[in-house]
View 1 (cartoon, rainbow, N blue to C red):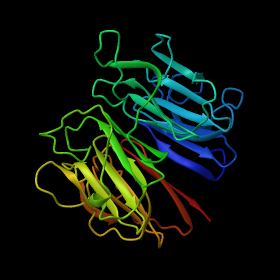
View 2: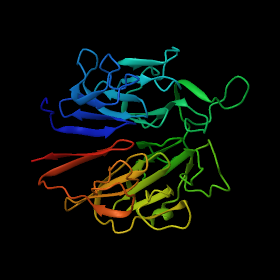
View 3: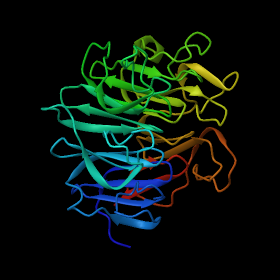
View 4: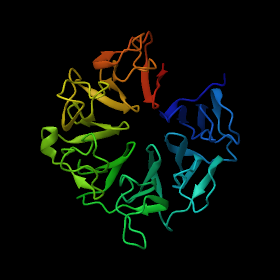
Length: 344
């Protein structure tokens, strides 16, 4: 197998893996039924393979949806490929898929610094802190965008700017199956879209699908500043400045990493036993956390063994993954798989 350079980003989609190397090259493998690997064909690939540089410039960030991929380049351009069944590729064209990366048109002067892919929608964050979204919008995950009839559009073909009621600039993105969110430079978390499982930190009985973004009070995180956010399909994580991890949303696979009454909990609460975390990642219904002393913790859905326990039983509380290695870890998740890169 080719030697993959030290990763800058390591993440996954519904069934594919994406690695951005330090030199800006993109390496991919896995499911490719809709061309989501960007290799010019639709055959599955079992080994990490470099996306040809003539097809794609130097990449800084990448994110995988269920069966599509979105990436941004050093020049601030966005490229998409894979399924376009819900216009998640951000183009006017009606093509059902694309097996090669194609540049997405943004308003003049927009330089994108990071991207996020949900189940069937995508987001982009520009250097000035603006947020754009496109694709499937039936649950309001792209935001409140009205058509000619005054009703919110169910599919948004092209990137549209999201109007956010935030104090500062957006610095991170969050994209779940049918909800979205941002973190600002004022450590403010703002969310919108589907709230069926309380993933917007509001009681599902009172707010099932608010399309207008709303901001969470800092008090819900114990008054501590949030430095990272992450999302599964129907749950969220927030990593605070003191290394605590808060979770909320759907809970029936143990993806909140703590006990709660019922199948969901809309109130963000600390994940049991996680201290001094320095990074988190989410699959569709499972989570990873890296601690300051180099431990890797995992919890949640485990049907395909992605929690690394040696069996397929769900993991309701964080458990340490037994990695027989020493070195610096970089970790990431796909919908139903996990991976760790060890730098010596």
